[in-house]
Image (tube, rainbow, N blue to C red):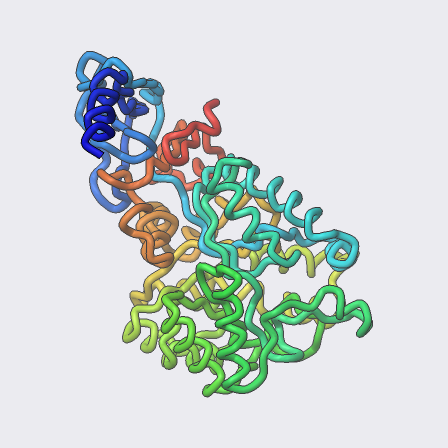
Length: 437
């Protein structure tokens, strides 16, 4: 043993030591909004080390200003003429789908690999639009959304960071269940989130967590695009709602509730839900509960605009039951957000993209401003608030030390003209540049 120890020591002495090299990047920002809602600084340098923010400094630093070893690498990005801000967060997308005349048929035609590859196409489009993180709140195609999430995390394919809910939790016949198919066809496309009764709802939530869901999404009320004349009122009973939320929280998952009518909104808020998606017909009690619980409203104004436009088309592909709900619900979302904003409800950005085309997510900013938010408030919904809504404020939402280097840039000033975010010129995620015009 002594001889072996002596040999090992000698071997270590003569073996060359491989230095650990670091990858540095420096962004020269003409104007920098590192924390939306706080001051904007001019002529700043953002120093990135191994994909995370290392520091920010005044002035445009050079390579000689950095403490580098001989093995370290450094790349400079010249954004001196641009407005720089954190990567955007869309807290409500359906990345595996996109609404159109053939959507209903594609659900039957597409294999799960087809769906995953279609989702990868959508992911690249969303990333190029400046959204470096998304929360997927219901994907089709079995485990397609989980496979995409993991492939992006491993850099196999480009896309935003994905937090996925898996299958939507829905009662039998509810909004989260597919409608309008023959029973034998329905067997092909049914999913694992259907449940009835308290015990079954607990099982359904646990099953999504088993499948590796990051969040849980359930339908507290009916919805616009379900092909049934069930309205937009409450669909789960209060005890089922509580079982879903309590089970998810016990397993360390946040919960988002699809909810249009006040009965379903209030039931979810009373039970401790983390966010309400849509919130179309929230009443005064709803606003009080939002304030008491600290839940977020994710208003999805773009979805309302999209369904209104499709329903108004004389050649609309919507079924009559869907068209009627779209005409009633779509225009109400801006009004509902205006009231919630005035009441001081916390707002997080979400588009419900798939209802609208992927890649135009930033149109939501224009609608948020139309609803009464200032441009800076609108930007906060997709950065600071978006990160908090996901429970990721320690690594996302601002350009601060220790957080992921998710950075975008535009030519103009979005705090004066929010439409600047419709045309993002530079996209970096975790220190890697995906777009630079």
